[in-house]
Length: 75
Image (cartoon, rainbow, N blue to C red):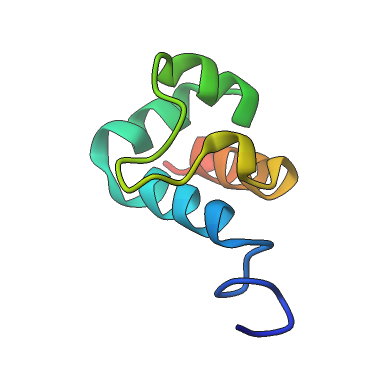
């Protein structure tokens, strides 16, 4: 583990959630429609975690908001 938490992210959950958002076609498409991470979570209901068990509630909202905002700017 480095000084930045987990692979440069705040924690493992944040890293894992961001990984799924950016590497799963359906999750990525939903992220492009979301305003922020809270909106993404609403779109993902009833899921509360990634397929490998990272809980959305354990992710760093500020970092995941940035992921969502970056995806919405992708052309």
